[in-house]
Length: 253
Length: 308
Image 1 (cartoon, rainbow over the protein chains, first blue to last red):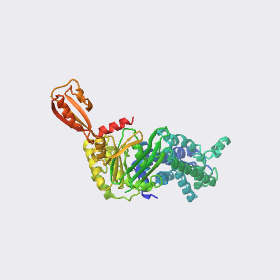
Image 2 (cartoon, each protein chain N blue to C red):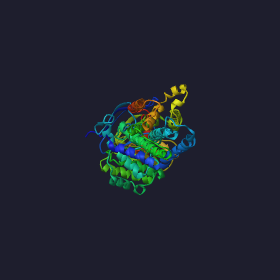
Image 3 (tube, rainbow over the protein chains, first blue to last red):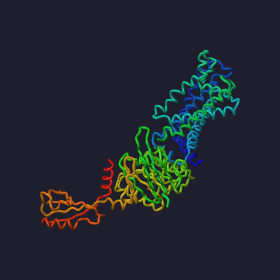
Image 4 (cartoon, chains in turn green, yellow):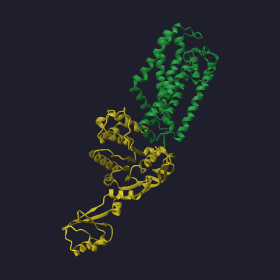
């Protein structure tokens, strides 16, 4: 293992985060605070409790997931796309470093940043609503697994994307509908039966549901099913990444 | 001594069907400076990219220090330094950080003293905290070199190191190459500037259309292919070359005042004395005689021209 190289890539990516502190940390905090003000305080005060939990508290896990997904996909994809775009990827490719090490460096940094932002959101949320965490271990497990899985997913997008439009396709066009329709802001019980069925095809539903269960023990699907879904998606992402590196897809001619 | 880089029947075809390399064989000796000359698109960069691990070969083998570049990539890439042709650098990093980053990527522990020395050698030390996007083109070129030297490679590839570089920096670059060679580094450089190859290389390889046309000691190459030219300045102009001089294959120029004779300087008989006596036989008075040797550039143009 070339640990120095992993350390270098990780430190390089984290330095990028520090340089763009405003955009990386402050902006998601502001966005989430706005959600809490609008959905939690303004609208939430007129909403009834959801399964014994106040509406503001109910949406907190969903909002954290929303931010986590966006951050991880965004960071994971940008981290590898940008060197491809500027050409500095030559240095990574010509270094004595295996593909596994490249992934650990980039995905590790993207996941770390996602977790930092997610934690900040959690703390921010606790200023607006009462948060209780019933299953801290499961909460951390869901949190970390989701961060790693979606950073890896982002990494794949970064390799696949051939321009900025493709790079932004997932974070801007595909993730928001999945998150909004995945029960971040409501329990799917509230939906008509047809849309409940449709929702079950949405992978984000399982993430949010499992994550929320670790907070309040309320869930749309069994937490075990949630866990298996995340693990399954992680395995799919790992397999695709392995294939990318084996074939050099879009990285090497 | 076994060559430090050994290339056997290396081929590369792109998905578009373009064949960038068509079976290249080349041995590079430890400690030498090899210049690869060739026009744009000849395959120079493709070859270097394959050795460094940026491009996957279609066929053939390359070993560096006895290790296969694909199987033992960690060993080979640890000893290879690459200064790419394009000035590709992160815009928002500082000089110091980007050089330290390269060292880390190659698995070396941080060594601030070494980086300081490299930056000083390249006159970059006072810019160490400057963001890369604020640097001039010449400075960026130096940073790329500093990055490649940061892990003390044994084989250094310089892909057109002096393209778009001013004269003084080019001279600096040549001195640097000399110093590196003195410390035992093997250097492979590609260039368009024949003058550069002529100045610093030990051996010269000419590559065109994905094939090595020749690899020779520079001196041997110049002696072998170098043609000499003798220009005879006449006291009075002539309208035509006298028949008696036809065996010499002279060319008439300068409105009839100059006769140009080409000969092979390595040949046993250059034919100069017989030409001179033939001239006086024809009653032509010679005012001046000058000779000049063809440069590497002429040799190169001739070789590449033949390949067409």
